[in-house]
Structure formats: structure tokens, C-alpha cells
Length: 125
Image (cartoon, rainbow, N blue to C red; front, side):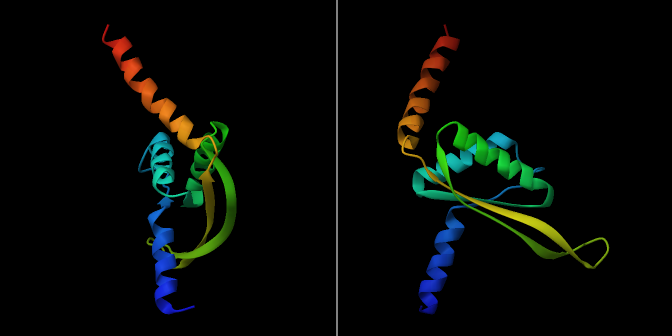
């Protein structure tokens, strides 16, 4: 494989990858972001380290249980990271979950897009 093909593959993967933190954004920010990524790409990759792993699993389960996504791949590993306070290398758990669009994805997205204005109209009455 040529070097430009490899870098093109890496670029494609980065465009649909979401690095999840359990401290920076609320859970449903990531759920909605994943939906938007799946609208533009056929799949989304959720990844997290350490304590944020539970957040990634929860996001994936919400998307699957509501019919938006199907699970394609789950990868777990450990990565070595430098501990800023102690200056030594520590191992952190890592998870990557690849979700694909479900067959019902577009219908569900269209249904949720049309119900929001109706609910807003009800609130204004």
C-alpha cells in the first residue's frame, strides 16, 4: 500500500472519531454528536481512556437501544501515558467502539426532527 493511501485511510478514520471525556461535556452532547457524525459518515468511532470508558459504553448503549446504531467492533487495549505529577509511565485502559448506522437511522432522525417543532409549538400555546 502506498504512503498516500495509508495517510488517506488515517484521515478518513479521524474524521468520524469522537474522543470522549467524562469531565468535559455532558453525556447527551456525545450522543447527539455521534448521531451527527453518522449522518455524514456511515459509522462513528467512540474512544476513551480510563474512567471515561463507562461513558463511551453508555453512549453506545443509548444509540443501540434507541435503534440509531448497530455495533460493528469493540477494541480494548492499554496505552502507556506519562503521569504529569510523578513523571513516570503509567498504563491506562482504552476502549474503541465502532458503531454503524442502523437500517432505521434515517427514519428515526427524520421523525425526531419533525417532532421537535411540534413540541415547541405546544409550549408556545
